[in-house]
Image 1 (spheres, rainbow, N blue to C red):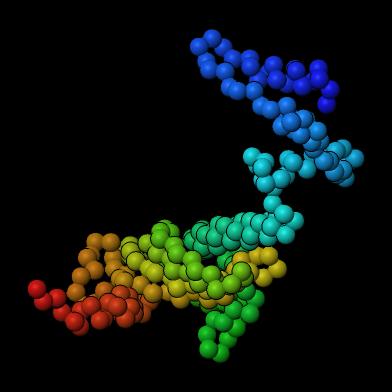
Image 2: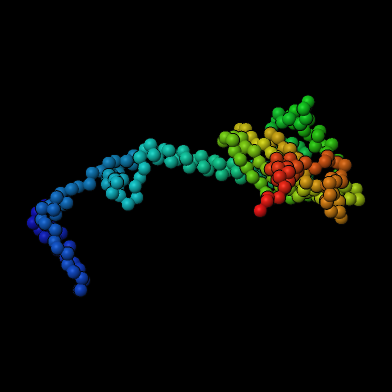
Length: 246
């Protein structure tokens, strides 16, 4: 650096407003070293030059290394896939209610994997379609409200869920109200989430003019006896232990 350049750099360090203490000027040797440092550059794919110090440890926005960048992208993709899977499964459950209430049994059957187990002796879509046909002929109007829904993944393509549902059925002169809890299994095949199993548990099933109190909580011949909350081991243990002693 020549003397004129050094003078201009030194002068710029003293451009302070009134009342502000002027810093002591840096030694010329320090200024000479700083001015002689030129940022090294690299060329990117477009042929433009990018200073290396933009990615150095002194940069305000540090860019990850190639390995770190790859790991970060993979992690982001995994997290995004999990969020999309959550939403796809929620949509699957909601579509079940819409399709059974509209009696679109073909579309309802397609929500399940093609080798779904229907009974101990039968599998597949034709058997499931026949089962749904027999079930839905036993009542007319139905309304499935979807409530709480928890989803737990065992891996990227398999999950289990618990779904609360309040369901109403028109059954002759009765209006049956049913509190249901579905125990679901889900699987992603060829990019699509489907049911692999759906177990129906319920608290009660009674006419809307009745109260589901007492031991007989199922007063509808279409379904069997209520299964929850007795299915929960914690429920049975709670009542077996009795109240806590002070």
